[in-house]
Amino acid sequence: ATAQSLTGNDFPPLKNDLILRAARGERTERAPVWVMRQAGRYLPEFRKVREKHAFFDICQTPALATEITLQPIRRYAGLLDAAIIFSDILVIPQAMGMIVEMPEGKGPTFPHPLADPEDLSRLKHPVNVDQELGYVFDAITMTRKELKGEVPLIGFCGSPWTLMAYMIQGGGSRGGFHSAKRWIFQYPTASKELLSRITTICVDFLIGQVRAGAQLVQVFDSWASELSPHDFQEFSLPYLCIIAHRVKSGLSEVGMEPVPMILFAKGANYALEELAITGGYDVLGLDWCIDPLVARHLVGDSVALQGNIDPDILYGGKEAIQREVKRMCASFRSNTTDGPKGWIANLGHGITPGVSTEDMGHFLSCVHKYSRQGDEV
Ligand code: 1CP
Image (cartoon, rainbow, N blue to C red):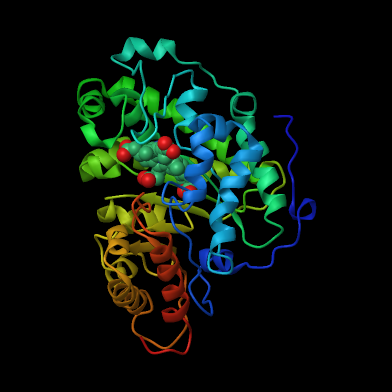
């Protein structure tokens, strides 16, 4: 690759490194907090931009992607500890040559999903990531400059399994992932070929994002929940491990420091222990279906944890939000008065479009209040 690597010296100095310290497993004065999908449809200022622009035009126009990434940071000034670049996991299938549409309010649609293994020949291979996804790198560089060091910037990609699921299913989770599941059972070899190709792109894509200025990266395996523990072992976990290890070695080859890597494998709590030992990730994201104390017991001190309140608690009103944040803080802090150790507060999945902006703000304030060192929770 000819792309240059940008370093800390190319950007304004960072003023808030709380999430970086927590991601390294350190004890912090309070839990850093951000929210998956924080730049999204619950924000009126996002919907306003969206009225005028197609979804992927926003992703492909660095100035628009920057503007939307900054929207929640501005609205919740001082309350959010990270920004996540505005983009989508489905930019990788697009880079592979697939058409992805995003009709408003309907979620992603692929007019020509992969039907059978012969369709692999329709995909670009190999994919030149600098060429196909350079617009994401440009958006990251612009956003990091515009952030003026307020908070670190997170880059991301979808996991091989989750991306394969969309490419075969042709649509979102509403209809289930039966066709994609059929592939792993009927065409295991072709499935693995597809997973390997996506893995290579994920590695190049994440390295490129770090070189462009991303200070942490997250891999979203949102539909790990569709796989049995056995099938997760076979069709997701090995590729997730390759991504973590190759991104780290690839960065060191170009003389760059590693950045913390977060894995959010929704519904794969049974694999936490193994992921902590062999996964290669610094932070494991939890959904809301596991108690944080239990998760900490499973992973020991080897990784930081992220999560994990049920996103629907944000529909429960101010009192419920406060009560449940307190409960989450107590569980992540093991009921001590010490500050949290290796914990990044978040929801257990993305914020949903109907949440009020005020309730989101209340959630963030409660985390600031109840995760603080010294307080009994
Ligand atoms: O704020 C942020 O988090 C940054 C922007 C972001 C991210 C990280 C978007 C914008 N999408 C994503 C990741 C993403 N995309 C995931 C992983 C996170 C998760 O599990 O929620 C997934 C599964 C997708 C796929 C996708 N794109 C869906 C889900 C469909 C399903 O299967 O149920 C949807 C609805 C989209 C569209 C989308 N992406 C992002 C936004 C704001 C939207 C809304 C689209 C619109 O404006 O019409």
